[in-house]
Length: 76
Image 1 (cartoon, rainbow, N blue to C red):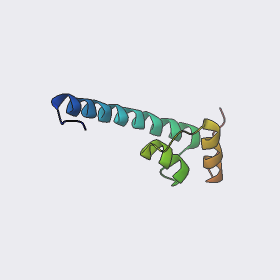
Image 2 (image 1 turned 180 degrees about the vertical axis):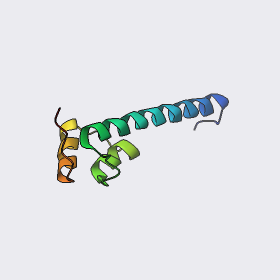
Image 3 (image 1 turned 135 degrees about the vertical axis):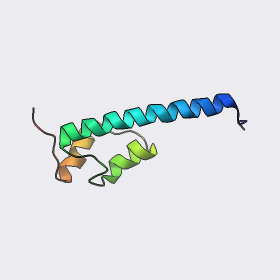
Image 4 (image 1 turned 45 degrees about the vertical axis):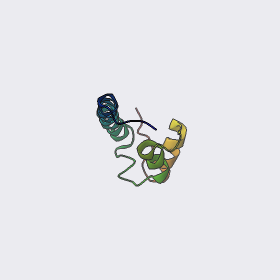
């Protein structure tokens, strides 16, 4: 069992800051590639992995899911 320490609090705060930055980059990348985000189309399989740490997903799988939702990858 872990004790609550300042070090643990600092690590959690640092990870939260990193997660926020990565999520911002991810949102921008989805908008550029698909014209929308996975949360805007309620893509549960992607949400489970990226928002709730439910395993891993391939770019090919993401392309397929987003295409089925009506947002195929943009050309170019």
